[in-house]
Structure formats: C-alpha cells, structure tokens
Length: 104
Image (tube, rainbow, N blue to C red; front, top):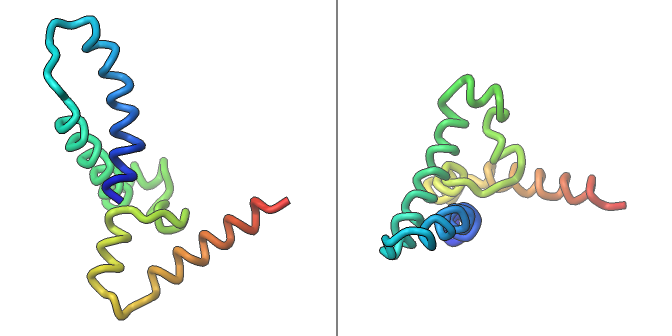
C-alpha cells in the first residue's frame, strides 16, 4: 500500500517540484519529505471520506470500499479483524463486478 501511494501521489508531487528545483539554487533532496507528504495526503483523503459529510457528498461515502480499493481504513479493518471476512468479501465482490462491466 505504502509503495503504491508513493509511486502514484509521490511521483506526481515530484514531477511538479523537480522543474521548480531545476530553476532554484536549492538542491536539497526532497524525496523523503515528498514521500511523507504523499502518505499524509492519502490518509487525510481516506479519513475525510469517512468523517466529513460534505467531502463524502462530493466524492461518495466510503468510495474506496465500494470501489474495491485497498485504502488505509480498509487495510486496518482487515488486519484488525482477521477472522471476519466481510470487508474482504465486499472488496472481492466489487472487483469482480467491475471486471464484469469492463468485459466487451
């Protein structure tokens, strides 16, 4: 999960910062800072989707679960209750449903 976040969001942030750094005298390696920032933004997004009513209205409540995505809250739920397979069954159902709709 962490690798996925760092690859997606971290790569995007580095892509935006690298050109600015080329034009600057500041050559400090920002990779670690960007990695931490990307993780923070991802966790904030997941948390906001669950706890902020307006955010959930705009994006859809618990859209990671209904979209079949392994977000931080979903992974926490699975790891915290390994004997309860309900969350995993929902994810697998969503993934299979999405695959069925994408077939031609």
